[in-house]
Image (cartoon, rainbow, N blue to C red; front, side, top):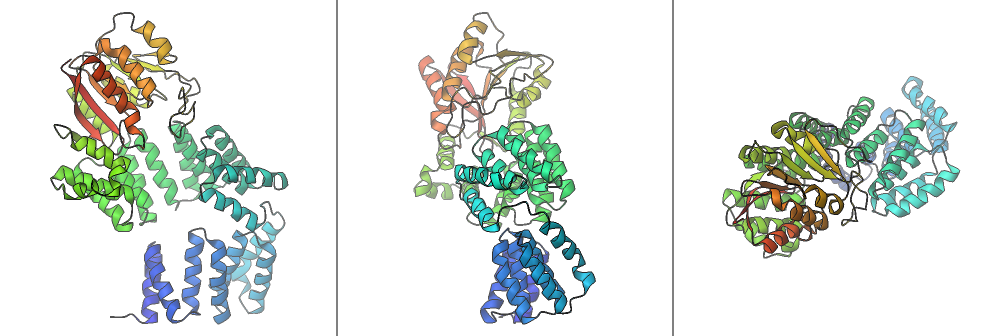
Length: 518
């Protein structure tokens, strides 16, 4: 039964209030198609546009609403607030005066009057068209162009916190994390209550492995903006990285309570699952919101394969998707003699491997970084050897620059941990020239083929049929066949070894193996 305009408006408002923006966005345009100047529908579409950052586009809708019904105070408030957001202070003041002339009560618009006067006297940002051009370059992935343009604008607008925030985001996307954090700090010095800058800085800190600092920054963002769904989601990522899964799940769910159509939070909840049933639930929720979510669609076919339904995956490997790194990774796993146990986060895979390991032996880790995995493993084995330059990647690795994943030379302080500092090719020959204890677990987190094959070759003397090898970046990325996978295959081929895969995680790209016929 077709809805009347009033019924469609009610449905749209209900969806809008429930945070279901996409659903609301279906009702309002339908109303405008039948009645293009419907004031409430125009106003509400304008509010939706502001909510997703399309402030400029909102103005025409607010203007139409006011032309039809200038007696509604909220229409004026929304229009003026949008102009303020665009830094169009002269226009905002003009509309404010017009609102007063139309009889809108002074106490209703008084807060906006103060805001207009305050911001008019201290405009810090570039004109809106220039700022929007900068934002467009960033959202289009033209990060260097955004950075160059932003730096030029800073010469004329040195106190623009928005410019510093965009410059920080561009630097972060280019891998210039120190420069990104410097820019975010500058933005915060100009605007201490800038929740978005705290969130963005926390993302950069997470990328640096400074998880505690990142969590503090997320907490600050949320104290300033309690309904900040993105910050809750990002907080969950940082907490998951620390192995605090219950807290991570709580953060993701909080994000979803604020933004029910946040596919990223559903995807991240999939990465906290304890079994395939739970994983499928989150993947299906993700696809319910976004049926075209590529990662979720491909992953669902893999989960169904594990349940015995192989039809979707078989169709995938006959389609153009067969070349996708996810599908190539699934295909490798499904071609193994025995389907490995599937995990959904690194800590679950670690626990499973710890349970199968020799507890009377130490563990070894190649690629320590900030030491999160090392600290986790030392709880069981009490003794561990860690190898790292602590200065980041020794060479470029795909899109990551030399020096990425640096801990700035800071070596973790861990009871029972012995850390050997330097490049593998420099330190391993000397270390393994002495007899070393057989390994319980070896965690390979060096990412690069060159580093991993070097570590495998030199640690051969501490590997036997009981040693479990865990590779941290084995599958799923675009070039996975050229990295840790290639190193393991080459190592086994050269030494006439074979290996069996014990466990796998598609979400974290980990694979655990044990050598056989050694």
